[in-house]
Structure formats: structure tokens, C-alpha cells
Image 1 (tube, rainbow, N blue to C red):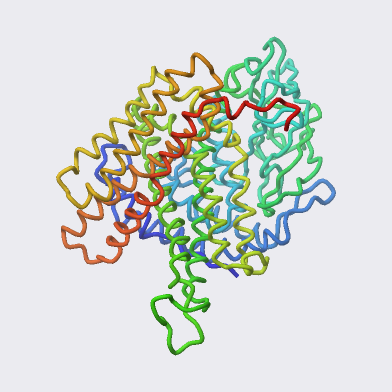
Image 2 (image 1 turned 90 degrees about the horizontal axis):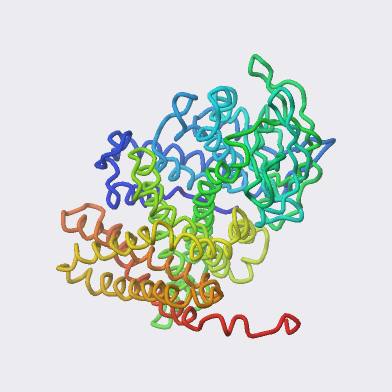
Length: 592
């Protein structure tokens, strides 16, 4: 069985030493002192380690099953779901008006990491519900909010998002699901949706589907799309589930991973639904869910990889194989532990340095979302919008790579199912694909986000990098190990932006051919910025005489590794970008 230990100390370091959340001028942040957040994270970590982690393999091995039209979840899932609900974990950052605890999103994300790392497939049920809650909260009428949100906050009712159709994946303009208006103000929804995560199950009284469909008069393409609330059971006047709606599960997808989550084919056969938001403006309402979901998927990328890393590090300390090249490290035993070998150290340091940087980036983005929502900070909103495709695309690409590295530490045993490492690799793989495949994230970044607001968010990011470098320029240790590498990497990112500006208008394929490399280049610089901030915080703690010196020294060493071994990849990505579209587009279609 695999292990999972909640990295509470590491999360606290980001929240307090790096972000200083209790000192921020945001509503609700004044209560987030170390003692308070420690109590939350310790409790959440206990649920994650003791309740959810033991069910991870169970969900993988049993999967979900469709029986007489009802989806059954794996053994133990419903009891665990009840325990999570009753503990209030599904409501932690939801509106108190509807039964939520009203904590900032930055706490919701930190708790979400622990739950996701311990059991990704399970945690998706409440994760999808939170996204649906957010869309209704942002775009629903007062009546819709009163009807649905209290039950969704508590996860007595769960939620989904229904976008994809068999013939239309990313190209939502091709969708065929129809919505026919009725005299009572409702619509009849007819069509089929596929890949619907948590589409049906036996853990809640009702499932509230948010469904994209085309109503009459909307025209072609995405401009004609509307969003509808379509409950599994119609809600009666007293607020309880009533008659079964005309929708059904056509099939359960047989997947590479996340077997414990019910990924459904959903059939709508004249199901009754109600418009959410404005008619023919469904994409705006859906993107409330999508943007939240993309940050959440980025979180999945590093959270599951962290669980894999923990197991790899433990195995490397315990598994005896070979002798250290510099002399026996375990002379009384038959061999030395794997961790004495430099290539194993390289493997583990690649993992550790990415994971800690990724956690910092995602948590900072959660703080920007709080600043956007709680303080109406337009700069924060623009910055997090720019960073969202980077968080989703880069963190999941590198997260998958990290899980594979963790599996590699086990050698052949990592390929054997009973060790559990295969599940991490199989589960995390979907994060690169759903909620907008990573190639689409790269196109969105270069095609839309770079030019947003006349490029102001991108310039704001560069200003933040310059400010970080200037703030610590008198610190000799930071200058050599962090500031100079960050400055070099930032120049590579600026050069890539300039290349797109100079060449993109002449040949759009030039920018699009380099978009994936740009996403990774940007991701490395973002993690370089995070590591510089973490190094400064660690240096400050050590200067002030912190008792846990080993922790802070470890941060500095891990950060120096990232800056020396990973950040130089920006030069490679820039070289690829500058090669333009010609190498990418050189072959004729029939030559593939």
C-alpha cells in the first residue's frame, strides 16, 4: 500500500513565510494566523491520510459500475463522502449565506491539495460540485441560488459540467444539444454529452447538471450557446428531490485511470432545464467554472505527483541496491540504500524542486483570485487570467513527468500494480487532457492572453520579476544562486514575447508553432520567481534565528537546484520558438 503524509509544514511556509496571508489587507485574511491555518490543515491532513488515502487503491481496483441505470461507487466511498461532508470540508470557501464557511479561496486550495493528493478520483466529486456552485453563485437568479446552493455547498446534492459531445471536443461551436423553450419558462434539453466526470453516482440525493446547449435564435458557433441547470431529479416546491428528469447514463467510460470517479455518457431526452445566466451567453457563464477548474486541474498535477514523490523518497531510503561509489554507506548490510546514488538524487531533486515551486505558484494564484474577488483588484484578475493556462498546462505536464520519475525510482517494481506507483501515473495522465487539452492552453496563452488589455498583465509579470530582483540585489547569496538565473530566464521570456510581436502578424503559424514551448518557458520563469521568493523567506527566517534551521536550509538547497538544473531550459524553449513555423509545417499532410 502507498503512503501519504500531508505536507502541512510546507504549505504553512508558503502561506505565512512567503505570502504573509494574515498580514494582507483582504476581508477574511486577518483571521488566518498560523495557529488557525495549522489547525485546519492538520485536520484536513488527517482526513486525507486516514480516510481517503486507504480508499485510493480500492477505487482504482473496483472502479464504478452501472447497474440498472444506477452508478455504484467503490466500496467505502459513500461512507467517506458522508464523513467529508459532515466535517464541512466541501463548504470551506463557500458563501456563508448558503451554508458555507466563508474562508478565502487560498485556504480552499490548500485543503484541496491534501484531499486530491490522497485520492484524486474521490475528490473530483466535490471538486466538480464546487465548480457548478461557483457558476450558479455568479450567474444564477436569487431563486436558483436559494434552490440549489445550500444543498450543493453541503454536497447533499452534487454538480457536474456538461460540455463535450462525441463529435465536438474543444470545438464547442459544433455542439448539437438543443434546448426548446417552454411556456413555463423552462427548456427541454435533448442531446448526448460524453466524458462527464461525476456524472452520476450513489453518494448524493441529487445531481445538478450544468449543460451547454443551443436554443433557437442564437446563430451558429459558440455565440449561440446557452447554459442550463438540469437536475437529475426535479426539485419540488418544498425543496426536495421529486420526479426523475428525462436524462440517463448511457454508459460508463473505461479509462486509463481515475477509475473511482464515474465518467459518464449522459443522454438528455427532453430533460427539463432552466437557463443559467443570459440567453445565448452560456460560454461566459461556463467559463466561471472552466477557469476555476483549470486552476484545480493544475493543482491535481502537482498534488498527485507529490504523493508519488513521497513514496519514491521513502523507497529510496529503504531499498538496498549497490554500493556508493565513494565508499560503503551501510557497511553492516548487504548493500547501500538507493538514495546514496547520485542519479537517484538527481531524480528525487527534479521531483522535489518542481513540486515545491508548483505549490507556491498555485497558492499565489489562489491569493490573486482572492484579491480579485475580495478587493475588486483588476490587476490581480488580469494577472491570474494570464497565469491560468500556465498553471493548468505546465503544472500538469511536469506533474505527469514527475510521477513517472517517481515510478522510475522503484525500477521494475514500479511497473507492478501492487506497488501502487502505476496508479499515480495513470491517474495523473488525464490532467494534461481534460478542461482544455494542454495544446489548447498554449494556444489560449499566446493567441489571447498575451495581448489581453494591450499586454498589461504580461508587463505586470515582468515588473514583479524586476521588483523581486531589485529588492534582494544586495544579498550576495541570493544574487548568485537565484537573482542572476532568474534575470537570465526572464530575458528569455521577454525575447520570446518580442519574437511573437515581430513575427506573429506576418505569419500566425510562427506564434502558434511556438506556443507550447512558450507555455513551458513561462512556467519555468514563474517557478523561478516562486523559488526566489521562497529563498528570500528562508534566508530571512535563518537570519532571525529560526529554530527549524534544517527546514529552511533544505528550501535554499532545493531552490538552488531548480535554478541551476531546471531554469536553464528557458534557453532551449526560446531556441525552439525562434526556429519558427517552417520546421513544424515542413511535411505535406500525406507525408505523416
